[in-house]
Length: 384
Image: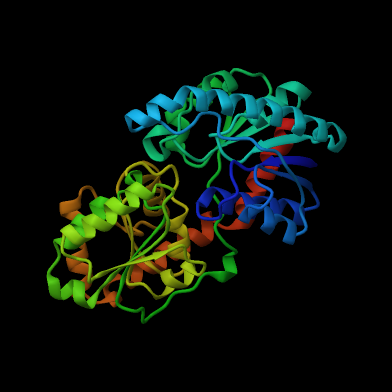
């Protein structure tokens, strides 16, 4: 098969592009031909694709709609910004379609549902289009998704949801063809468990409001000071919003925990941080899947996660599979604070069975091979 694979941006900070890279590497290894499409010639992902030997084209497209405005100034500039995005995306669609005519793909695959250029190219060339639903939209990424209803009406539209919950949220099974396919995280033979981790708590992900960062800081501030001294909170991640990052820095000062919280920024070796951590905290309000969870579990890290959306679905699946909880669930900052106190006062050996069951769940459900096989099978069913 020939696949025209379109990324929504060129950052390597989020899970979507990492999962997309895992997918196209696996598809290429199975003999399929990939032409990758990016929107920034000098972006991190574009460089990685070229270094990996992928054929790549660049077109200056954007997300379908600018992020939802949160201030008067942003509201004032929103209409002209939306018009610019639309016009740029029309030009990019034409450019991508011209290249696609030569490449002649069997499938067009958009790696995220925040873009619409893939669907537009599909309509121009009448080639099946797969949209990968990795996000809810406004409730988890502040993305406006007004383009989705129209896209779902097209007869050549097919969809992949990273969780059953996001499939239900978008009514994908009611509106068209859809399969739920969980992200593949790593090879099954790379799972490891550290029997003697270091004493620190870890947050890994983007620094934004939807990720529940403030809830985590409030909960951490409520545990005893001696526990914070012994178990610092390491925060690995960046933010595209400088104002919010300043707000978080101020919150850390106001809560009196500046001596216990270490802001690491972007970290290349985040899996090594997981392997050494006492626990990973995942406080997201609405996580569509939460790639960070199986990554941590595959590195033997105890996971503490908010019991909702895609996180809950992963934990419920693990419970059904193993008959035991594979992570510690919580519902609000107060309960999270109690859990963090218990963890820092306890012994990591107390969670040995949970960590082994979690690793076993990843080995059985979230390997790259299973991920690639499921997507490849879906492609074949579309082309039958």
